[in-house]
Each structure stands twice: as structure tokens, then as C-alpha cells.
Amino acid sequence: MQNEWFIKIFNLYIDDIYRLSYSYTHNRFDSDDITQRVFMKFFKNIDKINKDEKEVHKWLIVTTVNECKDLFKNIWHQRINPLGDRDIDIEDEPKDDNEFKYYLLKLPKKYRLVFHLYYYYGYSTKEVAKILKMKETTIRQLLSRGRKILKLEKEKEND
Image 1 (cartoon, rainbow, N blue to C red):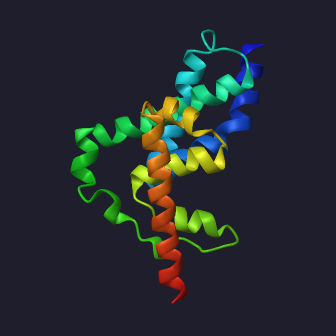
Image 2 (tube, rainbow, N blue to C red):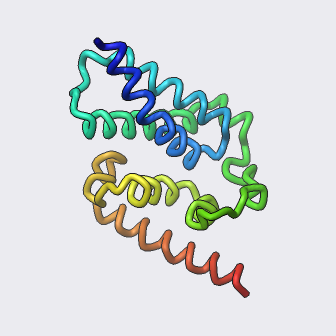
């Protein structure tokens, strides 16, 4: 029974977890590792987690965010990736039908995660604040500043 439930949740949310971790790390290999660790933790704690799908989704999101943050705290990761976000060449990213995704990748890391939770998953600013353990006013401020950055980026490209 638990294995069936795990497989159902895994199939439902693996893409979401991968996209969220990729929006934070901008690295396929790190995103693969984070996704794997999140689902390993989920399997290990399956008996302790509320069976409500919305609660499971929140648990997976919070765990993913924490895994992303832990990755960047890791001294080994800092040594092999000393430039942080600078290794991202946004021009390599395809500017396809999903224009928002293209511009989202241009945002600094601190905005990307908030935008991802707010716009992709539809969490309220209050829920995002709770997930990220920040004040709701900080989340609203990050959204506002991020929107301004995106607007400037779009205007710059249109000129």
C-alpha cells in the first residue's frame, strides 16, 4: 500500500520538484541530485507524513527548498562553483513559447524561488513566506522588485 502511494506521489510531483530545484540551482546535475534526495527523504518518512495530497506537495516543496539551500551552504559546492550564478549563460536557454520561464531564468536566485512558488505553484504570499521561513512583507517586496527587474529586461530586449 505504501509503495503504491509513494509511486503515485512520485509520478505526480517529480517534474515539479525537478523544475523547482532547477530554478534555484540552474544546474541539471544538482537538480537531479536534489530531486533524488527529496524523494528518498519522502520514502524514509512516508509513515510520518500527512496523506493529504496538498500537504504532501507542501512537504515536498519545503524539503526541496531546504535541500537547495543546503547545497549552496556546502563548502565543497562553493569550491567547485566559486562564481555562483555567473556560470549561467542565459542565451543558451531556448526562448520558446514560455516567455515567462525565459525571463524568470534571468532573475537573481533570491527572486527565482519566490516567483516559482508564487506563479508556478500558485501559493499565496503568506504560504510562500511560511515555506521559505520569511516575513510576508519580504515576499511581497521580492515579488515587486522581481517584477520591476523583469519589466526592465523585457524593455531592454525590445529596444
